[in-house]
Length: 138
Image (cartoon, rainbow, N blue to C red; front, side):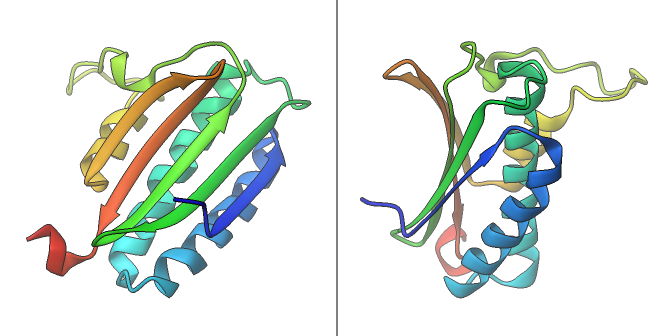
């Protein structure tokens, strides 16, 4: 299914707010309540920040593409980059009582979304996340 919304930005943290705004508007337009829309924005922000930090290692001259589509019962969001292969789902989670900055974003993404998948496709990283409408999630 073709994306209804697609945005490509350079890989600089300042553009994360644009991604957040676009995804918030899209999620709400598809019938997600305010809490679910917030969770989508949170997960996508984390995934895009991971691209900037890990896949591109802070290089601001690269591109991050975020697309969103309606799927049965909810929405699907893809975050695509052409950086170093980086499977965020395969990363070990820190111990719950370990005090440190960072390292819990993947856990957060998995906690707030209904599904989170990673694949390397055509030399690009693709993180795909789905959020279902409450009626379909129960």
